[in-house]
Amino acid sequence: MRIILLLLITAFVIMPLSTVGAEKAKTIDELAKMYDSSQCKSCHAEIYAQWEKSHHARPLMGVKGGLMLTPLALKKGEKGATAFSEDDPKKMKISNFPCFKCHLPQAVTSAEDSVAAELAEALLAKDSAKVGKLQITCMVCHNEKALIHKRELGAPEKGVIYGNKDVASHAGGKIKKSAIMKDSVFCGQCHGLGPNLEFDQAFQCANLYGSYLHNYVSGGGTKSCQDCHMQKGDHLIAPNFNDDKQTSELLAKALTLDVETLGYEWLRKAATYVPKVVVNTKIVSSAGHRIPDG
Amino acid sequence: MVVTASYKDKDGKVVENKQERHYHPQATNCRDTKMKYGAQWKVANIRDTAIQPHQPKKETIEFELPDGVRSADVTVDLFYEAVNPDNKYPIHSIKKTVSLDK
Image 1 (spheres, rainbow over the protein chains, first blue to last red):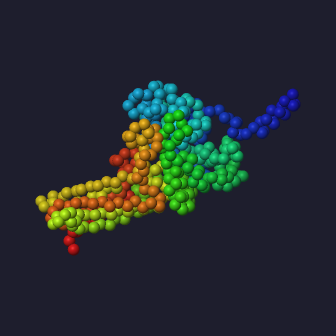
Image 2 (image 1 turned 60 degrees about the horizontal axis):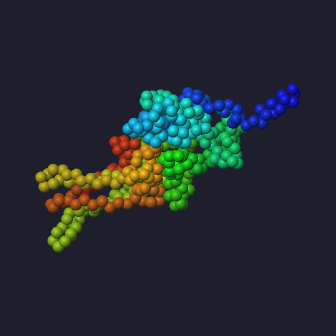
């Protein structure tokens, strides 16, 4: 009996934390609770407030309150329905929402198909409050997406927060260093290379990281996404397309426009002059990626 | 980007001529030749006129004026559109008066 007890205790101690409580969420509320990061707010109020205004806080809401995943939830055959749609929203599964790869990565690892069905019904009911519960919270970036060398490092440990450095003593849980947290590749996990060909129905969302690699780095660019979009640790990670003024200012900072004009009379043929205005424009970008992209 | 050249015709009526340039990646579903909007429809870019790093975007836009018109007001508006063309974020607006007289 003692030996069995010892074996059980040993097994529990050496069992990776990630397998403890590995049960998946069955509802939107359960998934939201599983990745709830509201406890971070008490100590990191400014960062939390920045994040609350960010697109990461409303990854399924699109721009200005839109419910961007609605076409997927439409019934198959209905106008606007997609290849991912089913004839009944109750049949929707996690695999019917390939957008979860980036817009809700925790659904891929931690949600049952019932969450997809509930989301489909919420989208059709235009239930923004329910859809809005699904967010890319602190724990999605600082845990779920923090490691990309899983064959060497293993999966992110449950309950561990990944940051720029190790912090043994931290009120919200142990902090471990992620080598990629300050690198563009971290953002590139979602802010895309191009077509997502790994799915049975290929699709394409953001190309931004591809543009960064192939047009910015290739031209000698050395800044990271974080250097420009997370200055001083800003977790708004602008642009915020719900803020028109701020978005215009950010774009004006990234793009210069030079205009030169010429007025003259063009000699089309003998004695036939055509009054003409020529406008030369030149746009120069200081961004590290294609504009527009996402 | 919208470039507008406006001038007064011989009757004093203001005439506006506009030319547009659109800068963005353009994708199809690779099953037909129609451009698609929305990640769920797109598969791959077939054309990319977006503004890229290290690659200044230069245009030469010409307007022909009617006989007798000797000047035009030129406005270049650069803006960003998100989701649909009605949702615009102004970036720059530059106005110039162009004369054909010395």
